[in-house]
Structure formats: structure tokens, C-alpha cells
Amino acid sequence: MSAIDISYGVSTANHAEAQIKKMIARAAKTRIALADHSKFGTQSFAYVGSVSDIDVLVTDSDTDPKYLKGLREAGVEVVIAELQEPRKTTHKRTYSTK
Image (cartoon, rainbow, N blue to C red; front, side):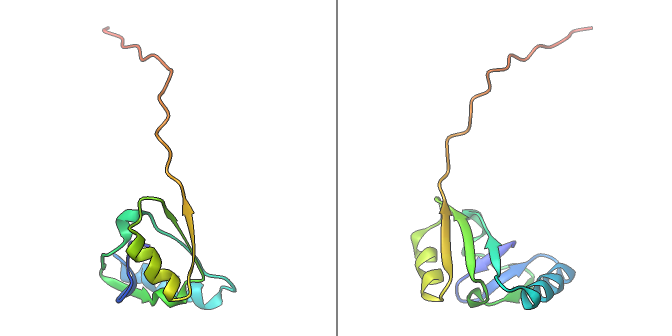
């Protein structure tokens, strides 16, 4: 999803994409959504549906707790993936000056 707002619902930037997501949601037995913390509190162009249409939402640990609370109050099961520090590469970069 491109955007999720507790009051407005789920939205995306493309109308055709929104229509496809609506059809998928109607056909699904369990509706699972994935949204990182940057998607919360925003609205996009094309409305997909209410947050209560989501059964399970997976997000990261940087998501503001107020959004998590609102989702849970709407009956959504929230799964939080803990963010980890990025791995430092051990590869040395070599540059050629030909």
C-alpha cells in the first residue's frame, strides 16, 4: 500500500492499482497488508478501503504507536518486524583507473 490513515483508510497512487487491490481483497480469505512506518498518517490518490478491511498488518518497529493502537481498535492484528542495524559490508571496493 502507498498510504494508510486510520480515519481515511488505505490508498494508493494509481486508480487501476486500487481497483485490482479491491478485487483481490474481496476474493481473499485473509487480507494481509504490508506497510513500513513511512506509509502511516498519509493519504494517496486512489482509495482502496477501510483499515478494518485488513485482517493482519505487518509493519516495522519505527511505526508510531498511535497508529498501531488505532489499527488494533479497528480489529486488525498487527505484526511488528523489529528493525536491525544495517550490516556493514566486509568487501573491499577496488577501483580501476584505466
